[in-house]
Image 1 (tube, rainbow, N blue to C red):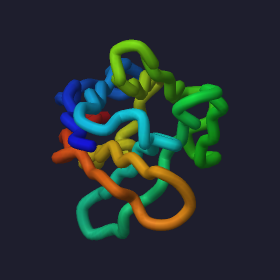
Image 2: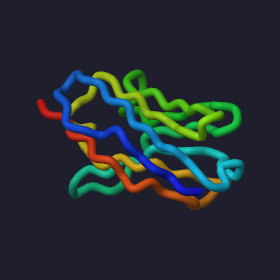
Image 3: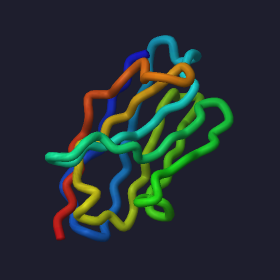
Image 4: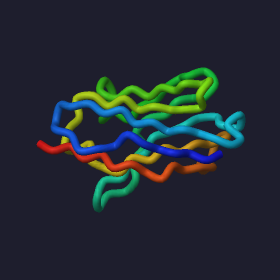
Length: 117
């Protein structure tokens, strides 16, 4: 599976952004898609997960109520709608897909999100 992430940018606190992650290749192998972020000088952090078939979602506490993960199953594309952005959301955001438990099989290239105060 190949992943292509897009949608990052520079916004002000309180603004919104929507990230996209287009999957291609053996997309029928995707079990779940995650969004992971990495801020400067920090380790990568799980943000959200969507189970590809049934759409069940999971979030890290820091983004609950502000971020929404979704997918267009027919178009093999995942999304991360980010509302009420905060400066602490500034990071490179990656999408990653897995065919099951364990390590990710595929990573997108990362997209920069910068939130100014």
